[in-house]
Image 1 (cartoon, one colour):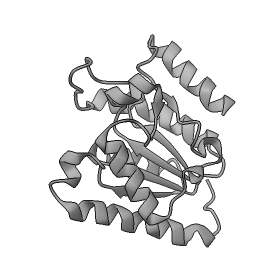
Image 2: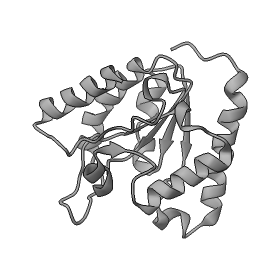
Image 3: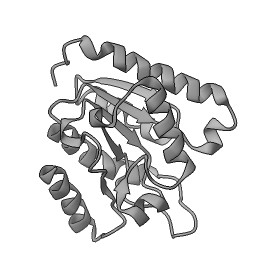
Image 4: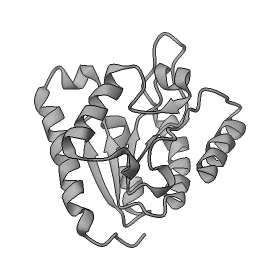
Length: 183
């Protein structure tokens, strides 16, 4: 976990930030993760707790945790990060990640992938994170998947989206027996 703590500290220092960049949840697999979930940007609850975690007190986190549990994905297998590592809000409302935010975040994402030596899957969660697909496709040989964002706005409007996420996660569970791809 030291490498990831140093990674987050460097992001904070390089961007003149502090709590706006939450740490990795120490209860997850992190450096030993075989699955990296990449969302858009940390929410206010992640900033408040200091962690990007599905244990955070918000509905998106609960939905994500429930979907992973239903698919049989254990937290020891995962790391959770954001395409934009810093909070994009003002304490009341979060703004959407712009192109410049994503481009800046992609450099950090590439560095993170190098730190995660056991990585087999990168899952781009939601539309903003999926903007990283083309970038990652020519950087890594790791399997890149996409799924819907677990926010209530998405899941409550179409319950099939949660079911589709669970199917993607179950597919990763089944593929665990396959040898990992070369980086």
